[in-house]
Amino acid sequence: MHILSGLNLEEIQAVTDELHATPFRARQVHNWIYHKSVSSIDEMTDLSLKFREELKKIAIVSDVKIKVKQESVDGTLKYLIEYPDGECVETVLMRFDNRANLTACVSSQVGCAVNCSFCATGKRGFIRNLTYKEIIEQVLTIQRDTGLKVTNVVFMGQGEPLLNLDNVIKAMHILNDNFQIGARRITVSTSGIVPQIYKLADIDMQSTLAISLHAPNHEVRRKLMRIEDKYNMSELKKALKSYIEKTGRRITVEYLMIKDLNDTVDSAKELAVYLKDLKCNINLIPYNPTAENDYQRPSNNSIMKFKYLLEHSGKKVTVRLERGADIDAACGQLKGKV
Ligand code: SF4
Image (cartoon, rainbow, N blue to C red):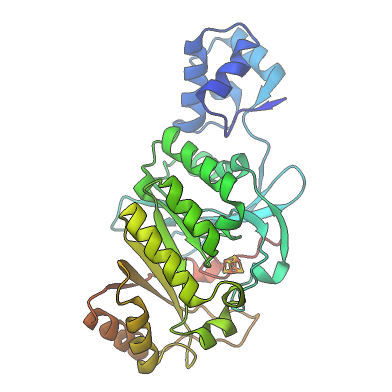
């Protein structure tokens, strides 16, 4: 049985060719999958009843299930999606009242091997990579369920996207070609897998690279992110510089702010020095406390002071709006557990 979601036009045509249909039929099916986001072949009403019956014998739209769906008071939706092998991942749709953007935050792996100390996903360890089709299914699931069109995609859900780079790149191409989501509306976030940052620069998709830095120096970063022992901040900086030079793109630096650990005036000054010659915007993310560790959210006063100091160093700084904290959909809270 063919699964139509995640196939490109040529692949859909290969399916409809089995029924000796014209290429036009393939284009219709493609449109129903990616732009009208149907859940079943029966809903493809501009295809003849006979053709739909034939197609149903060899194909289905999707083989994933929504296991749990939660809605936050701020409108954020979180889905726990189950694949046919029983593995689950979480996908989040973020909506902002004053913007037309609908941003899907997708997972790239089941579990994660990087094991950052603040992250609920890392606690599960690595289970497996998602295929590009499984990544695409997350976006389609959101579109099918809400009837809305996703406009932006961030690879910031479960998993380290750069440790599943081939599938992530294929998924990015499909988002670009089939969903018509511009590469600049796609963000890939990494904990800092240095060799893969060089690789990503080589294929230059014009997407945005977000680096989860979260620390002003090696010592603090080691406490938060074990990856620092493998690829330290100086190697990371070289890779980021080379990425920026090669792609001409500005990167985003993500900085999770944790009370008394990395939110001090000294930390802000040290961070400003580290980022001085990097073309980047900075995104400050006040920590969302979870039951799994003792980290605390900094006071609003420390956040504003920190922001001011970085802005003073000439950077554009935003404080990320918290989305979905009440349903554990915020940064570092995704688990993928049933
Ligand atoms: S923060 Fe990202 S890289 Fe770190 S453990 Fe969690 S999912 Fe993996």
